[in-house]
Structure formats: structure tokens, C-alpha cells
Length: 296
Ligand code: SAM
Image 1 (cartoon, rainbow, N blue to C red):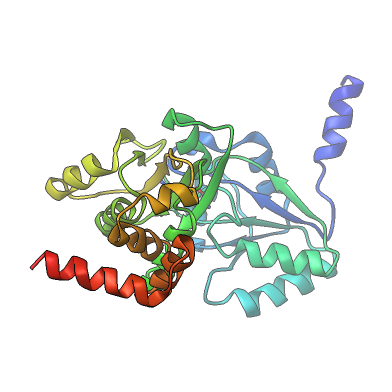
Image 2 (cartoon, rainbow, N blue to C red):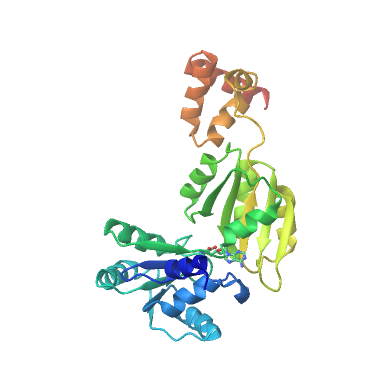
């Protein structure tokens, strides 16, 4: 064994009382890394989001190991249980349903709990749906943000989208198939038409990369039933935020709409328009009445 290999072996030997975050495949079992397999094989305990799903993976890898469930609804009590185990020197490997733990799954809380208690946390990297989608999107990868799942709550969802309306960089979202149509419509309505890449069933048999625009995607899924798992990669905003001069050249109605698109209610928007134009709120109101009269 060369010195370098020996050093690597040493480095890869698992340390007691450590949490290992082990990435697992997002579809194709061959995406499991050598180090991931070794870590699962050598850990004392595996904490899994879905023990049945992980049991299938372990079976495929020929690994027999005690499994503990750690998922969204038991994360508090199980987190404390796992922390106590780690404190007494147990080596724990954490795996999620698929992909990288702590990315849109409860692993994030366990990592925080370990950090607060000085428990070492070691990444064992591998597949992540977000990055796999980004690198195949053909959209700029130099700067990007991961936006996760949009909230199902209408207000938070709108706030989230308005907060990213002018972001110039590429954005990555996760979405469930039954919510895809709603999400595409919301994107289109609040962010305007722009490029989107729908990365579907990555690394699986029916993998598909659809590079299109939001308006076309809305039309496409009017006909087609969304099926499988999706990552949405969205182009950043193309136009620079509007300057005061740009805004004052808009019609009063467009100017008010601009602020309402940013999340203001009508009253707040009228106040902002009055301030931009250096006139009183009453003047804006009178202008609005005039526009209404003229459109009758
Ligand atoms: N931890 C995972 C990761 O590293 O990507 C993500 C877990 S999150 C609960 C599940 C979401 O990831 C799915 O709803 C989907 O948006 C995305 N996803 C997971 N596997 C995928 C795949 N094979 N193809 C496309 N999207 C996938």
C-alpha cells in the first residue's frame, strides 16, 4: 500500500461519536458512491427517513445494519435519541429518502442539533436532484439559488415569488407533480415569461429535460398530465429593476400595478406612486377617478 493510499484509508476510517451524512441515489442505484457504501457498512446505526426504502437499498448493497426512522414527524424525539447515542460514541449514518440528506428533508435539524452539542458532522457527498438539474439545464450556473419547495399557503407562496422577482441569477425549485400546473401558472403570472427547464425523473428510465419558456410550459401541461419527480430550473430576471424615471414614465395605473406586483396593497401602492411623482395622494386618487371615467 502506498503512503497516499494509507493516508486515504486512515482518513476514511469512521470516527466514534460522529454523524455521517450519506448521499444515496435519486433513482439510479449505480450512483451510490464507494465511500457511501463503506460508510453504511461500517456505521453502528443508520438513521433513515423511510426505513422501508432504505432497507431495499441496503439489501441491494448486501448490508445488514440496525435502522432507526428519522422523519419530519418524529424529528424532535428521535433527534434527542440520536444525539444521546452520538454522545456515547455511536457512529451514525444519516440517509434521506433519496439524494443528499439535509436538502429539503429533516436532516437539517439533526445537523443543527449536533453542531449545538459539538458533535462532529461529516459529509459523504453524492447525488442531489437540484445540482443534477442545474448542470443539465443549459442556464447560467455561475450564480444560482436553491429555493426548495414553494409553500402551499397562498400568501407565503406569493411573498416568496415576489421576493425573487428581480433576482438576476438562475433559481432552482422542487415540485410535486400534482402541484406543477399551479406553480407554472404562478411563476408566469408573478415573474413574467422567461426560460424554464423542467428536469423530470432524473437518472431514471423516463428521464426527460424539457427546455422551454413559462408560457409554453403552461400550455404544454394543459394537455399533458404531469407525472414523476420534477426539478424546475428558472432563468433569472432579465431586465434591471426600474429606476424612478422609468416608473414616472408609466401610466398611473401601470405605476400602481408595479407596486402591487411587489406585494403592496392598493392604498400603499397609491402612496408610493404619489411619493415617486412628488404629488399628493389626493392627486393620484383624482387621476384614477379620471381614468375610470374615461374608460366608461
Ligand atoms: N434530498 C433530496 C436531494 O438531494 O435532491 C431531495 C428531497 S425532496 C424531499 C424530494 C424532491 O426532490 C422531489 O419532490 C423532486 O422535486 C426532487 N427530486 C428527487 N429525485 C428526483 C429525480 N430523480 N428527478 C427529479 N427530481 C427529483
